[in-house]
Length: 111
Length: 116
Image (cartoon, rainbow over all chains, first blue to last red; front, side, top):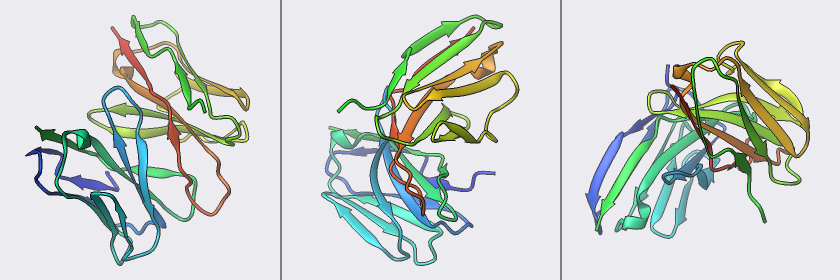
């Protein structure tokens, strides 16, 4: 059973388009992290959201944590080829060390 | 600053052989994680060490897998004997866990293991 479901699994868009990636669960998380992984490398943390309803912006990336802390979204404005990669959400439960990773969204931004 | 270092980057071996993956965490970090990533199952936690002590090994697939952390700057993940289904990318990550929630995990570049 996958605790964190990400959608879509794959996304191929043209440079300049906007997109949203979703991370959903039936479980409540203490916090949620978003990572980006490029080919041949390990995941790199983008952001951590901890409060229900929280919105964080990182340049063209906007992250939102759902009010009930069961879901999150990542919105990218005016996507660029450099945004290409695998986006992973990871949830933490009960203020634990353990992260539960989502299935990932593979994004390709075509020039 | 050096990040998490893993070796080898690529390993190709034959079924039945012993495989040892190595990791050097970031200096000063007290937590170390071994993950396995496959297309089918995504990123899975295999084992977690805190202050060199294994805390959670519930993700270790079976007795063929073992991990050690003899000191704060080195860890190994061993597979003996290896099987084709062990083929995956294995990541080591470290963090400075201060309690009260997950801190930033810093991942190494991974070891791509192929078992023929």
